[in-house]
Image 1 (cartoon, rainbow, N blue to C red):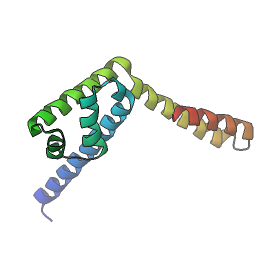
Image 2: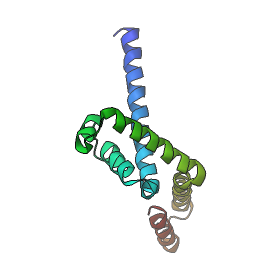
Image 3: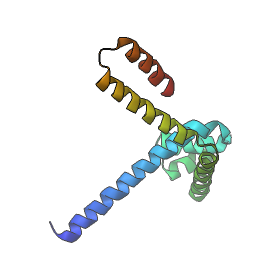
Length: 130
C-alpha cells in the first residue's frame, strides 16, 4: 500500500471518529437540554441524530427545503453548545461519573471484602447514572 493511500485512509478514519464523537456529544446535549428547544428544533434533532434521517428526508417530512433543515440543525447545535457553556450539566455529569468510577475502582482494589462499602457505592453509581 502506498504512503498516500495509507494517509488518506488514516484521514478518513480520523474524520469518522470525529463524526462519531460529534454525534455522541450532540445526543448527550440533546438529552440534557432537549426540553429547552422548540418543537421544531426538537423534532429535527431527534430525527437527524436519534433516527439517522438525512437532511433530505427531514425536509420531505416537514415540506421544507433541505437548506432550511440544515440551517435549523446548525443553529440548534449552537444553542445546545451555548446552554452547556452556561449550565455545564453534561460536563458535570461526566465528571461525577468519572469520580464514581474512580472511587469504585479504588474500593474494589483496597477493600474487596467490604460488602457494605460495595453496596453503598453501587447505590451512588446507580444515582449518578440517572
